[in-house]
Length: 271
Image 1 (cartoon, rainbow, N blue to C red):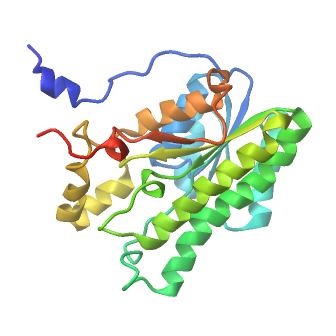
Image 2 (image 1 turned 135 degrees about the vertical axis):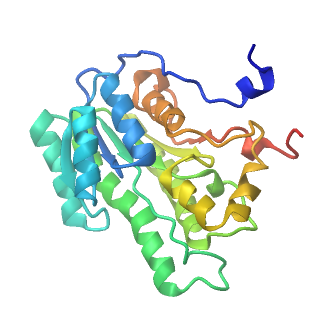
């Protein structure tokens, strides 16, 4: 017999079969691992053509193989390479319907403002925020010509909350993603383009596993604040991306779409 509490703390074992994205083209950055890889698989399962962008050629090619898509090596901080990514999507599949601007970093040298150097600050801003600016700038002209499109930018629940275990540049970059997504969603709404900021809580990805390995105490401080009592799985975040990419979310725009297990709504958590 299954313990009800244990069952409540477990992630769903299988995603429902949906086919909401047949014939649409989705460009995913950071597609080689974590949330990006899970999303490439999920959107492909829903019928989308997938273009996997990643700086890691081995991981990116593997993601493209798993999703039946196309790989483009891209440094998301390089404007020309980002333009080439979206141009490849259009030339290969004939449209750019979905942009999941997901690439990001959280290096250990990004810590308290008292110890984070300017070089570390700038690097995180470039990868996490400037890249989203570049991807939106490249995707929107295609979507304007089509008269439709869905852009999902990966922000974070830390864009809504403060943390004593600070990653100052990461937090600031995600706040910028949230604000930019809101403004773009308002600006282009009447041209059929929706822009939303996806705000995941802590997710069981290689990035988080690395944090556990390097500093288990710091990582455990995060877990205790999640009402569901566990970290999200990448597939659960991918399901939220699929919703935002589909017509099921046709009236969701300029939002900070929280998928955080209740962490941002918690005053205290269950014991």
